[in-house]
Image (cartoon, rainbow, N blue to C red):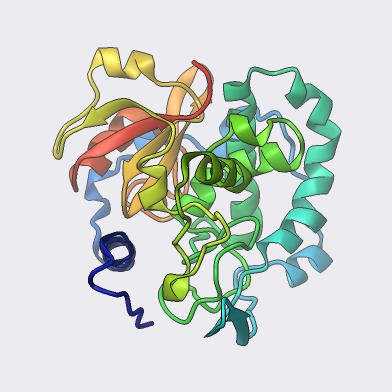
Length: 311
């Protein structure tokens, strides 16, 4: 995919540079990273702890319709007068047909929870159900749960119907919370509807789509790196100290332009989840102890930990 940006438009040019770097860095993570830094002693499998939202065993018919090998269709869309050709995702069908029937019986319980714990339950559920249907590593470039991103013509699993990229996964519990009426958009700037309100109130332009177009307020890593408020920062090669660990809560996002993941809580301990990346896939797709995950993640560059929920 070749994107042309006017060089005198600095913000658009930098958006292109960050997106290009993200493709290269994610490809490197998938094909070149060493798993020697990842130790199974810091991971935990889903069958070893209780989850709020129970996932039924998929039927044969469901797995025929929803699996990692389902190809998308090549389409051309007219967007702001530009013709864009590529392969769209169909994650919203999975949301409507599989996710929603599982989550709806838990809505009343989720409404009674603190926002951070509700996001925690949705993050764990989302990670587990995508693994259940699409495998331990369900990464799909430009995949988001609402199918807001443009059809794509390159990068990892770009022609597949289902899967989430790192920002699509990190934002997913917030998207689900707004979708099911558990949070108002203004409470969840890490969701597309929350980001849309932020853009309109702050006079920020959404320019993450192909060919300088809007990305329908679908969040990308360069936007996650500026939204919410910074809880902590970790320098390249650094790790969390005790004070920083104590500041963390479920639902915090961890990353930098190029890659993001999310903090969750399991058995009163903090863990880390991601789609793609150098920690969770090498651990067998399992949640990984947050302090150790962030140390591995920070080996590649400075990180920030960000929050949009109340403390």
